[in-house]
Image 1 (tube, rainbow, N blue to C red):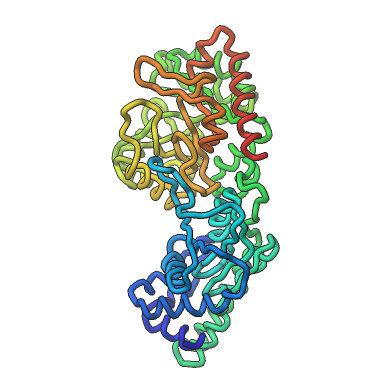
Image 2: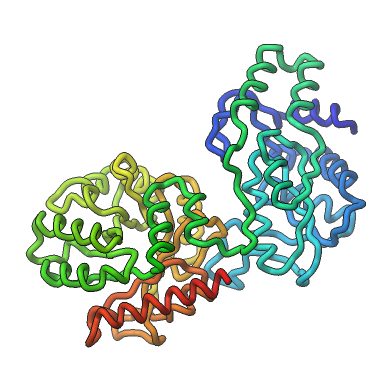
Length: 464
């Protein structure tokens, strides 16, 4: 099948759509290429796999990896017909089983060909390359069916990767115009869109797959996420203090004495027995003085309409001062929508409880997986997770881990503790949350310094 025949067949089966489509880059495109439909047309799918194989079969590689999810069937068809092994990247790393980000059998040093359906900015390709590089697999070539000609080729090339495309958006449009599938007006509209939507700040390959906090800040859309990640590198702290005390005086004392060591002050504002608005004013003063942000550990868990009022109204008026809040996802995505309606205009942020540190909790398995899916659909407001470690390869999400002590162990109420080294270095989390281990210590300030140093050293070890 020729390239023109392939384009016409894709048009015939609905793989080429016209309208208004929001792309991963955020732009609204008048044309959308949907290769997912090809799984229902096995002969067409095999034709695509064959023509892509012909493009690259002389290159030096001995393993394939398809970018999830659309390119996985293409890579599978290439693998089966040409008897070449394949590995698969997980978009979401499971919290049980092997917890691998890359599935399949491979050896360090193997050369891996990346298979993708199309390239716009190159971000999805980089997201797949990074975990492969972490496992010492070598990547130099990427094969795609379509280059949208919006900067992806340039970005990949600038980072040392070769893009091999079957056809470009220009060739696709020329073919559709020549065969009367689109008129001159639509042709010009798409050309105008492509010229006006070149990727100006493309994703860059990080030589170290564990991005620094500052580097990751550039990948975030939420202003609080950017502020927090930049603050962490500037202050050299990934320590959050869980100030679970019951009086204004105690909370203010912790904020002032421990403030220089932390990036986040985590509160339970509804347990303060003598709460009034002067407490918020004093805490805001200390946050500016010591450069930390507020995380109100409210754990919203109701329907969207209810949590809107819990967030904005009442005596605490949480949305007015808390940079970050968190929520269970047991109520479904409506809870995110309700909180976002209040928080996004105020430039606030949300963490989702994907896992918990208490023994016997129910936050695991399908609950965690669905939580990750909800987060991915709301990246403008959801900035990360409460979890026991890194759950996804997306560097734009920040992972907060509770239950941290310098020594492993547990308490009488089922709280399980891990060390900063284990949480940050081994489990890939970003922020350690420490409570009683600091503020109940004989010298809380000195203890906070120990935790800050332990957490930061684990981070430096991870990115070194």
